[in-house]
Length: 96
Image 1 (cartoon, rainbow, N blue to C red):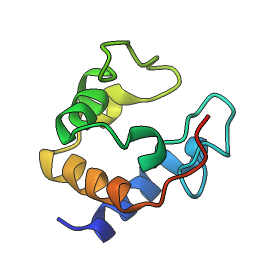
Image 2: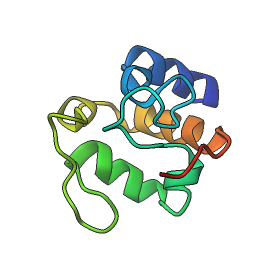
Image 3: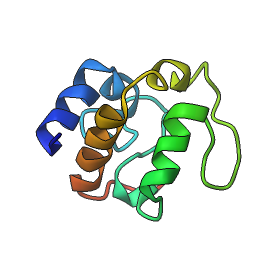
C-alpha cells in the first residue's frame, strides 16, 4: 500500500473523469473538490464510510448516481486506504 498505488486506483477508478485531473472539482460542476481543501477535516473512518456507505461525516447521503460509492464499496480495505493516502498527499484545491 502506497500513495502511488492510491494514485493508480484513483486514475483507473474514474475519479478524475468527474473531479478533474487534480481532483479539485474542475472537470464537472456537480463534482466537488476532494483534495485536502475539501476533505481536510475528514478522518480515515469518514473516508471509508463515504466510499462504502455513501455517507458524508455529517450523515448526509451521497447520491449514488453522481458518486459511484456502491462500486467503490467493493474495494478492499487496502485499496481504500491507499486512495486515502493519495488524497491526503494532494495540495489543497480551491474551496467551493
